[in-house]
Length: 166
Image: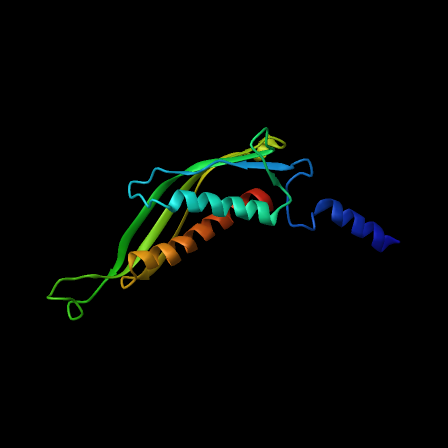
């Protein structure tokens, strides 16, 4: 009998779905993110928005809506930079000119999260992540692998801050 009471008490403190969202939170609206970064990747904002929508719709019980959502997510991409992190040594350089051996991609996304069921959980926050990669990658390779990796990491951070609320 004591075991059953303990289990009931535990389940009232923790959601077995892993979500800290209130049971009254039923719908979500994720508006298109816009790209306001100085270096503009033409597909970044659309892909980021689609990936973010998919994460919430596939991993929660929230339903997408355009009218009176329980949760509103919107924002902008504020940073997209590729910068050198290491350079070649003079013996490895081409014609004595130092070149980048590795580059770093950094993406920053400003997020407005509005929780209309539990307004105290709402926030405005910037999420940033980066990845270091070889200078031998082509622009297409960077877009197909590195940008997707950084987007995935940022989306994980956003999702965890909203749904897991550790």
